[in-house]
Amino acid sequence: MARNVPCLGPRCNLGQGGTSLFRCTKKALKVSKRGPSLVFWCMYLNDECIGAKCQYASCDARAMSPQGLCLYVPERREDVRDIVDEARKIEGEVQKLERHLKKLGLKDYF
Image (cartoon, rainbow, N blue to C red):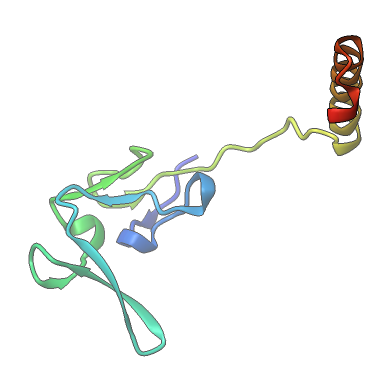
């Protein structure tokens, strides 16, 4: 399912962890604040970043088309773990450690 959304450079789609997928291969991208907005500045060309139109632009997800469109579609996570099950599992591990420490006579240190 491809979308026709232009890659806007550093304002492009966010990947895992909330970081931008856009990368400058020259590592010349500088973020500065101009008034209330952020400005992405190219230190290599000493001008504002033009995003996907630049020949040094790349995408970490390899989802940028040659026309500069962002084709990234985030994955859906279906395996949602239940916090109660996780707590029971950790509790079982703690009890196991307590038994081992008790055998060694170190239960007071837990």
